[in-house]
Amino acid sequence: MSENVVVIYSGGMDSFTVLHKALRDGKTVHALSFDYGQRHKKELDYAAAVCKSLNVPHKIVDISAINSLIGGSSLTSDIDVPEGHYEEPSMKQTVVPNRNMILLSLAVGYAVSLEANEVYYGAHSGDHAIYPDCRPEFVEKMSDVCRIANYTPVEIVTPYIKESKTAILTAGLKMGLDYGETWTCYNGREKACGKCGACEERLEAFRENHCTDPLSYE
Amino acid sequence: MSENVVVIYSGGMDSFTVLHKALRDGKTVHALSFDYGQRHKKELDYAAAVCKSLNVPHKIVDISAINSLIGGSSLTSDIDVPEGHYEEPSMKQTVVPNRNMILLSLAVGYAVSLEANEVYYGAHSGDHAIYPDCRPEFVEKMSDVCRIANYTPVEIVTPYIKESKTAILTAGLKMGLDYGETWTCYNGREKACGKCGACEERLEAFRENHCTDPLSYE
Image (cartoon, rainbow over all chains, first blue to last red; front, side, top):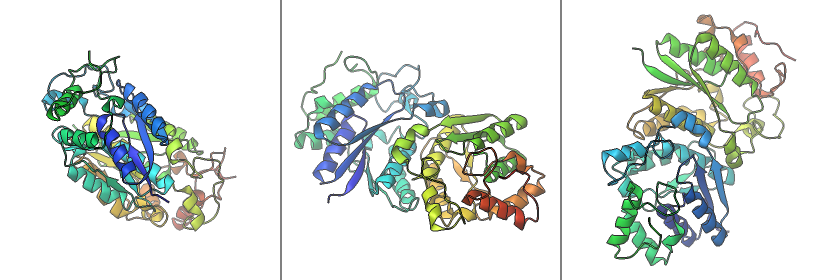
């Protein structure tokens, strides 16, 4: 029997690539998405559609109640999503306090309940500058605690943590993946805005792969 | 100005003692309770009443949505709460997958949003046998990751982690605390059952302190 793993799957291009990587690694994937009141809830619809077409079990857990604790990021509140380059100081407004530790600890709880020993998560080097909880030392220390916190030890698996978003896209294109099945824009409108930090970074990855993004932009 | 800290406060006797310890340490306390669908929800009413009388800001966050991920413990589901001694194998039924990492990661998120550098939490040695996430090595490794996960470093403070429940009660009685203001029983009925593992452990702590529990029992 193939090994059960949990994949944290936002519906964006990084975790979409990780999901496919886990499947190609021969794992039995349990996809997990979080509704934390993000304004780009559209990514969850994309996640659900992909899991359905792949016949992958998928849970969406509503954790928006925790915004009373950690609200104030422009991803969840009424602050405007900043435009411009991803590594600029304005992007700090998109930092949700302790976001990845919260999401990972829930995913690890889910893994323990499934007796799965791995949680896959799509951290990558492009996020290191802004998000401390996307850095390799965070993942290492998080793995250290997840190995001993329960009767079932769990490893945090981050296949692309040392790669750029461009390199993740290269890997996914090599697997023949269709990135029209992913959503990235921080604004949840009909079409992607093309201007927020997330869109900018996505479009840069496509440019650097000399290839056109199949998504429609405003 | 006194230092802001978050205290994870269940309404039980350990965290009640920790709450008072933090206040006596001169901290500005922000108490945090979790509604995770526990059947002993009564402890939350006890927590609210205590915070009100102490004029301590108190948040109760409903995280019961996560039971779809980590359900199956007798504390949250329809499995009967086991009777008998706290360290028996049957008590493993009360283990909620990754419970403390989830609660701590939320408390740390709250601390970061308050720019508080400490989270107080009432782990003690009596829980080490059954709950891996109450042991000192868990808390150390959790502190390691909480120091680097955000722009605000957060320490996990566990004043009683090497103490027994009896010693915590001794410390609280010395502070003059009234344990009639706390709730421990895993069954949430009118009076405490006196038979579940939690009641048994509580009553043992009172016996060992040669003192009578002010709570009423069935």
